Image (cartoon, rainbow, N blue to C red; front, side, top):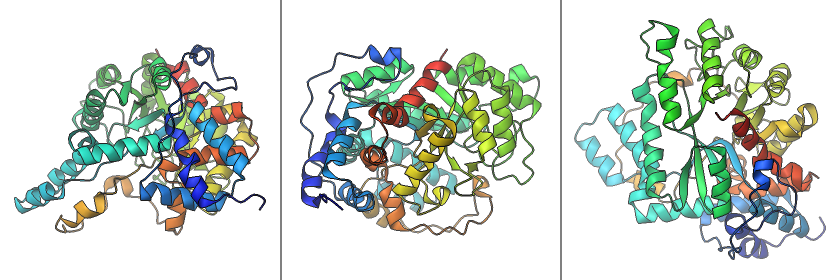
Length: 449
């Protein structure tokens, strides 16, 4: 390889650029609304990354990509200048408080209580614990992500079940609003980029239903409430069958129910994006066929490249893209197939672009950064008995073998190197900006009511 990138110069200089530079992009930005964002603060000198976990992930990905210095420099600057929007993912996760969790086990807390406590800590200790807040901010800055379409719901339809994560991320963005705010309109996302902040745009892993089955109108009344609370995208199904349709793990593949069609119409009316990432192929197809607004599979892969129940075949992708929607390629090795690493991620993006067009692909990582303090805190927690396989995980055995290198190369904090990889593959700056944020922003703009 010509001009190999020296690890010291790579880690010591250009890696930090992705988080804090606020210079306006020289290339055209994607929509009229974005072109209005012209006033930016003076670019801030990038902070050097000291976090060993982030540095290791960068090194692994770099050794796979092997960019030239020119490609690396250009890709990192483009990433820093661009609005970067994770089409489905997670804000950095905090470590649990091991002492508090151990005390709860000693007090005979139920498995449900312990799960809830763990989840609450991972989502909110970035507010209350200074060390976790530093980790949270460092990871967010290193990723250079403007906005995350944040999973703020839990698998299911019960409003009380669904509201917990919504509350936790509302709390986090309320308390850390100068760093990461809750976006409720597409303009809020643009403003966050202009201001040099990050933001979360909220999605739910299920459609909230009354589950009383009196009338369809009564059954759907919580959808408006959750929209008012900030949810802007909802899963139609989550792996298993529900009253809307079949999930991707159902062998029957029965498709969308009559009620599911009414739910899609209500989503269209409210301005909620239908997400079929975890839906069966027929449910995904029929959702796209009946929707009057864009449909997305926010974190998935292409079945032609690698068969998996979480992937989508070409005819389904075509139906989704025909709505003006998109396919978000995820960072899960066993779904990506191939080498399962950053090169496989780029292969999946290439496939969608060549087959369905540059306007219909995004990156929906479906992964998060986890605090370096987690290992130490988890050692404080006594082992608990293994539980039965959860409902959402009842799907066929998957023989694909993931390696640490695969997972590390597509770590969430490696977002700047996703951009570098796209530059390597010959995409124009404008097209890179569409893939790393502009396409999902456009879908949000077209869907918003």
